Amino acid sequence: MLHGLTQTSTALFLFATSGLMPAEAAPVSATGSTALAIAAVIAPYSPLLSAHEKTTIACLFDGNASAGKKLAVTAESIICRVGNVDITARSCEITFKKGKRTLKGRQANEVNATLTAAGAIAEGAAGSMIQTVTKLSCTLEPNVIKDHSGGGADCSFATDQ
Image 1 (tube, rainbow, N blue to C red):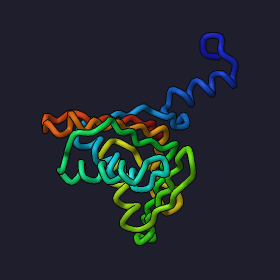
Image 2: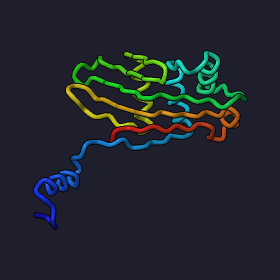
Image 3: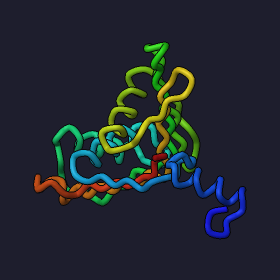
C-alpha cells in the first residue's frame, strides 16, 4: 500500500503518473497569419456564412484586404485522416452547427496541413494519422487586417494532446 491507497487506487495513481492516461482536450490559440489561414480554409465549407462573407474571407487571405465588418468562422469539430499505409487516403469531416461537410484529397490535405501548422496534433491508428479539433472559433477584423500590422485574426480550438 502506498500512503493509505488501496491496490486499485495505487494502480490508478501509477497509471496516471506514468503519462499513459487518455488524452484530454487541450486549448490552442492562433493569431495573425496562421489564424487567417485557418479561417480561410474552413470558410468555403461553412453553411453559417453567406456567399459575400466567404468571398470577403477569400479576398483577405489573397492579400486584398478592405474595410468591413467583423467576421466569425466556427466549427463544432474537424476530424482529418491521412493514410500512412494507403498514402493516397486523405479525408476531413467538418461538423458545423448546421450540417457536415466531407472533404477528400487536396481539400482535406489543405485543412489538415493548416491545422497542423497551428498546433493540432495527429495520432496514429490502424494505418492512419487522425487529427481531431473541436470548438473552432475564429474572428477576423478586416479593418485591422487591412492596416498590415499583423493583427485582426484570432482563432481558438481544442485538440487531443
